Image 1 (cartoon, rainbow, N blue to C red):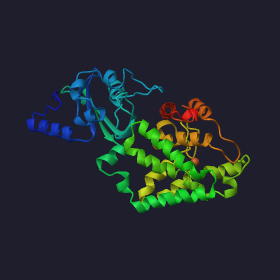
Image 2: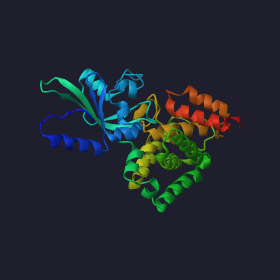
Image 3: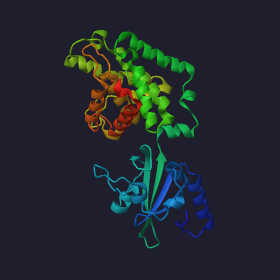
Image 4: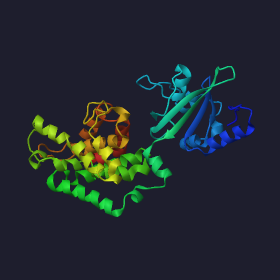
Length: 339
Ligand SMILES: [Fe+2]
């Protein structure tokens, strides 16, 4: 920080403020009224993998948002710029930041505010971002999934998974393949830290099917509306089963939303876009690809080319386009589409 932002006349106070900024794990950014960066703390540098000296004095929008002020829904990409231009301040609001400098979206709690000069005129805008990203908090607490889940708990998950497979011809092997695809996507998206969580969540994504009668699960013909309603219950049932075990509550939330659609037309809650947990969006793509390329009780499998075309066609409506893009790249590079 090179600017004197705090001029209370107590030199020690400024020193103290600097120390808080330096040691904070929250991200702190300050811009001037022209939208240029005047201060960032080390947490920002670490996240973006860029030195503070490369950003200070530069335009916030140009250096962190690729020159774009708004997203496709005409919403401000940067909360600081929104506060600067509209005066709206954020108070611990959950926000998803999308910067070309980040491998993936950054989920955080955002607070912004206007710093005024002695005359009460705006002099600068600050933002505090509390990192809510699951994998980072796991990293911070130095807890890997393995440490969170002991061997016995993992055995329980595998037993769940085997129990569903025993009743449903299709689910047998399906969950394992979904888990492999989903983990590959997570890794390709730079989410190595959560790839284990993605794998385990995918293994149990259909655990709620345990509550569905076998004649519906294995029905060779089209389902009636009533039967389809029953099938749809598996998201909430699965989530409720997993939530009963403390350590599995994260899995419960992921499983609950694996049939939501990016356009908000899915179930059980009709969540849209990034309101759907990222891991659920990843599982949705892996699940659909696996389903299309497998034989079902009522139809033969589709070709891999066809399945990829379908994913492309439904990117942005059913699926998160970014997840589809990564998966298609992955499959195209693997030679799998020629199988
Ligand atoms: Fe499912």
